[in-house]
Amino acid sequence: MDDKIKKYLFDIHEAILSIESYLDGKRDFNVYLQNKMYVGLLNANLKLSARQ
Image 1 (tube, rainbow, N blue to C red):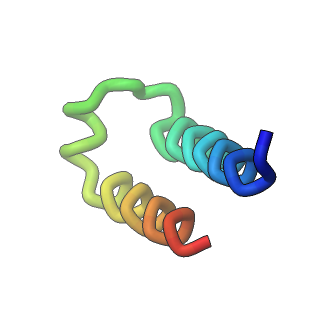
Image 2 (tube, rainbow, N blue to C red):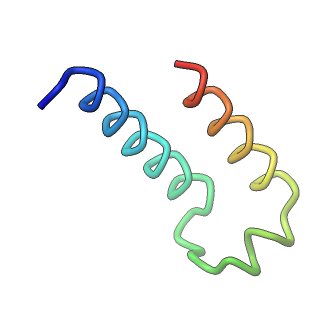
């Protein structure tokens, strides 16, 4: 597998782990939408991941 693809997959995996830790087991999209902190953290994480 190409190293660039591996890096993208690694970054996606790290973003998923971060999202899970932000949500603290509350895997409900409505809970996520109601908490601006979750939305902000996720958006910042995705922007950072996209730049790398």
